[in-house]
Image (tube, rainbow, N blue to C red; front, side, top):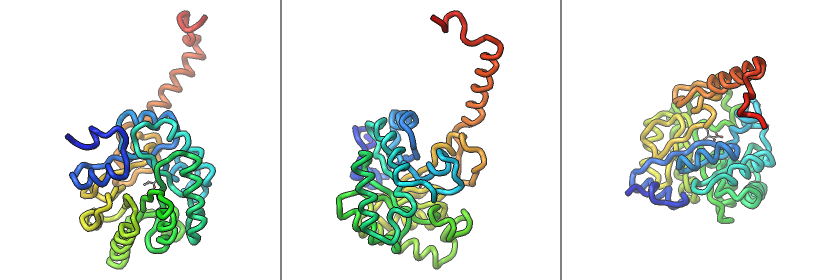
Length: 271
Ligand code: KIV
């Protein structure tokens, strides 16, 4: 029987076991109680409280402005809803780069104040001290390589990463480094499928892709993108499973018409 069907709670060990058995890991982002409840009941393996909340919840044009307090608010709401999934929280921009003690205290705040199960950090060699220090406190860390949106002003664009040999070699080195230091999983974002597949084969750590092809150990998408709540964002890797933007708009329009035409409330909807 597939392990994800039997476990009552997804842990980092369950993810290793899934990789060993070739069972794919399903991860989605989540930022609030109501949605997290649906995701958990649907048996998603991991809910990532992503700093994409900065875009899809707060309306910023990048992930840079969101604060640690705001991430803690979102994560606390998600944790309240979850019985089975592993909940991982992004450390936001400015809370871990360049200072491993600050990184540790940011991660400790997330763990203490939210009840989440681990944190995610963007980058490889340049942040490895922060990753190691957080891990030394017993906090599970998920790595994130390839397109790392917190570095958007360095990249200048959201195009596919690691298409040239130098960047691909660095990414492979970074993945090994994250594995050696003890990360429990690594996200690979928007890189060539062949490269992602090579990384997933070379490391024992589960590799979760977004725009990284199918030959990795699991997939992640931003919830609002896959549900079709966001409209403007449509990279090639995004599969929309619904068009909630239009559905919600339609429902709201019908409600407005019903209110205006005295069709709502009716006899049965009053006291
Ligand atoms: O913040 C986020 O949503 C993410 C995913 C795209 C992996 O980091």
